[in-house]
Length: 70
Image 1 (cartoon, rainbow, N blue to C red):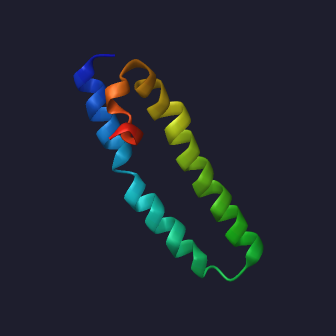
Image 2 (cartoon, helix red, strand yellow):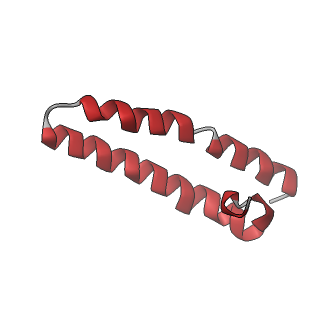
Image 3 (tube, rainbow, N blue to C red):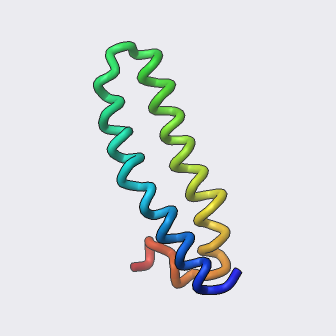
């Protein structure tokens, strides 16, 4: 993958953090504990998959885009 595409993708994936964090905050209003746990698990799974399946392969090829090194 070329450098420009890697940068664009990482920016795109990074833009998902805010809405997912907002959703994680909003779901805390759910009263039903079973439903709340399902939502928490789903959001955590989405966030983990974005990192492991989408961002990490790019970081391995292009370490300069690793947000943890900035």
